[in-house]
Image (cartoon, rainbow, N blue to C red; front, side, top):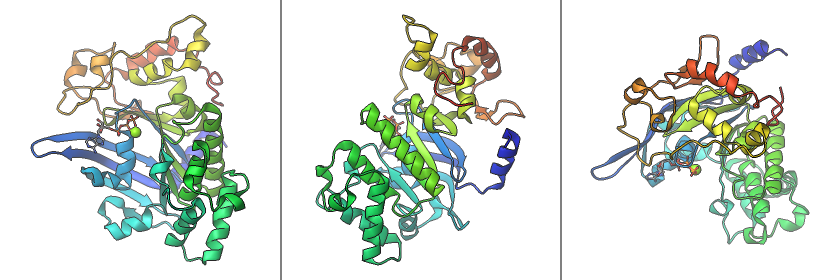
Length: 364
Ligand SMILES: Nc1ncnc2c1ncn2[C@@H]1O[C@H](COP(=O)(O)OP(=O)(O)OP(=O)(O)O)[C@@H](O)[C@H]1O
Ligand SMILES: [Mg+2]
């Protein structure tokens, strides 16, 4: 299938998620702190979209807002989040009441986090917890639910699932607990899985195994995945498309191959050039370039491009005028928020010969 046909086919499918101008603010008695500004994106059925960015950029707030969980810690959300389930029914999650939300959370949209113990109850056996998740949303007998729970433990590669069914979360290692959490998240065959740094706390080998399991089950269930990470290595392995977040806004969107081969935003280029795999491809002894400075703790009210204080390409205009996220050119699906994207793109083209397809494990 050629690329044009694939894009045409995709555009005919209904998106599982359409996020429009999502903004989140935390309000104190006299203060208002905006942490997410006008975030818009879509996810198609069966697609893996990665959300990347440095610590504090707003990735978790985005994830928690999609299921309205951020409201519990005082976040005020605006915008719209259209979710279309497997039956083709579309709802705006932001307009749902708590009862309707309960029917979506953990059922049609599931979430997994970095720390499984926040989702698992330490005083209940893992088998009981998965069985309960099934019974809460589906009309099956207790016996059937137990059978499915054991099957799920088997699918996430827990050895001897019949015996481990009655064990408690603390009897499992970190990697095994993460598998249990995946089993629980997938118990109701969701249309969308939101995974917020699910492998960050694990060693590299365990991380690779968990990523494999998520990929395999995603394909088996034709589930869409929003994968949140700060690790571009993981992105290059698993994502179809990537969104780069900086200071609560998406500053670049591209398909994975395009992003690594031809990043458009100077921040994205900086992130890619900081990857050890790219550093070693450039030659031993060459120090890794770094993006100077850190994400500012507070960015609201700032004029111009939020990245401009750290950007070596910034000109006067960047400090005064906020760049909008727009298509790189009318024929491109890449979107970028940078006044100088076109110029920088042509300059960086010759600076990135080592970012070849294959160097980072990206298949052409
Ligand atoms: N409950 C809250 N009240 C006030 N501010 C919050 C709250 N939760 C998050 N924030 C702020 O929102 C911003 C984005 O935080 P978020 O947790 O989304 O970052 P992140 O990109 O997930 O970072 P990390 O990679 O470290 O997980 C930060 O400035 C954070 O301090
Ligand atoms: Mg986070």
